[in-house]
Image (cartoon, rainbow, N blue to C red; front, side, top):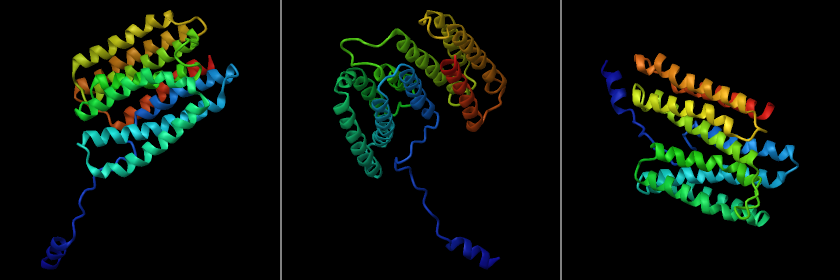
Length: 270
């Protein structure tokens, strides 16, 4: 007994290491980052668009997200130095990719007028430690949803984006902002009936809104998809948090994967 107690007492305790910002921990962001680009890329392939620039844009976008995430964590931590190695690395890599992209597509620089305020707002909210707010979610979803429009454009002026691609971006925003609301109802705001009502209302509005999209898009299928998402927005919280049952993050993630795959199927197959 004495030996055991002595061994336990003298065993060194490893301090918990905080995140250094190298790997984003917002797992739900990956679909939001990739799906709009994938939809824009599919449109370019079908219409003989500029494939190389879009692939370079994806590389710049992903590395830029790593730089954005690390910067937001650095600001949130009140500039703790442990984030600086990752921040410098990702910032330099993202800058190099951005310069290469703009040398190839200098007209895309005009999109900075739109992206700069969205990124600035998100980083400011991180500084205020409000990066989990609805406003922060809306700004990041808006930035991601713009990608298809950027990919097929010759810049902001003159406007060259076809209504079909604008519709794709709007669908992306509607869906991913809906997921922000929905996930809050089962994670951070679980059991809050007001959030559930807002989530259901948002998805219900998307059902008739789908019929306002260009007719080259599968409007009936999109309306049916958003109706299904509205049902999910009500049913899952009602079966879970509103009855005192919590769902694991893994279960939520699987559900999001299935719904995102279904949206891709609607837009890519049909």
